[in-house]
Length: 318
Image (cartoon, rainbow, N blue to C red; front, side):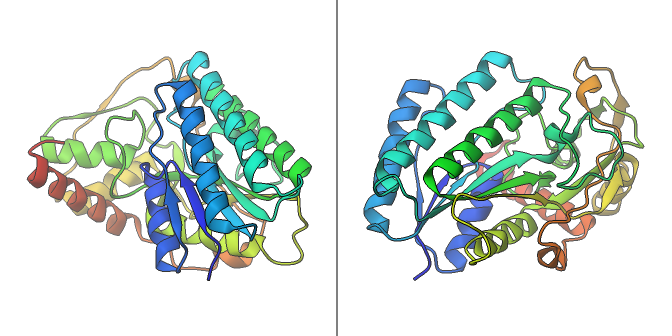
C-alpha cells in the first residue's frame, strides 16, 4: 500500500486537488479540521492530526502535504507571523510523534509561492537556481516557512519537497480570497460585474490548472522517495506550466469561453508595486517530470466557470 498521507489545508484549492489525486493513486489520505482563526486551538488540532498520522503509519514511511495558508500579497505582517508560528508548532508536533528516536522515515511537501519569492528578482524567466527576492511581506513569509521546513528536514532526516507554485486556478477556488484573476473574471462573467485590474495588461503570469498541479506535485513526491534523494535533503521544484500569458491574452481566452469580452476597468492599488511585471518560470529540477500535457487556458477557464455555475445553482449565490 502507498504511504499514508496527511494533507493540511485540504479545504483549499491545492489541498483539495492533492486529496483527489492521492486517493486516485491508492493512498490513505487523512485531513483535519483546523480552527485557523485561533492560533492556540490550531496548534492543538495540528498536534492531534500528527498523532493520527503516527497511528496510521505504525512506524512505517509517512507523508505530510502542507498546503495551508491564507496569506496573500496584502496580508498584514501580524497575520503572516501567526501563520509561520503555527507552522513551526506543527513541525514540532510532527517531530515529537512521527520521528522515531529523532529519526524520520517520512516525506514532507511544503507549498510555497513562485510569485511571492521571485517578485523582485532580476532576469526572468526564473528557475530554481534564481536567487529569491520578494517585494512584499507575503513573499518573505514564504521564504521563512521554507527555511523552517528545511531546518526541520535536516535535523529529523525527513525528505522535503518545496513546491514553488505558479498562479494556480481551477474549480473550487476560494472566491472570498483576494487573488486568482481567472476566478475573478469567471465570477464577474456570471454576475455581470466589471473586473478592476491593478497592473498593466502586458503583465506576464504562468497559469497552471489545479489538476495539472496536483498531478505534478504527486509525481515529485514519488520522485522524492527514490534512493538518490538523501534523508534530510531538501528539493525545491517550481510547479508551473512553464508557459507565460499576458493579462491581455487571458482576457482574450476569457472572451473565447464567455462569448463576450470581459468588462475590465484599470485601477490603482498600493499593492501593485509588490507585483512583478514578468513572472515567467522555467524549472531545471527533475525536468523529465514536466514533459506532460497541460490543460489549455480556455479549457481550464471553461471548467472554472462551469463549477461556479453549479455552485450558484446549488446555493443561489457566488
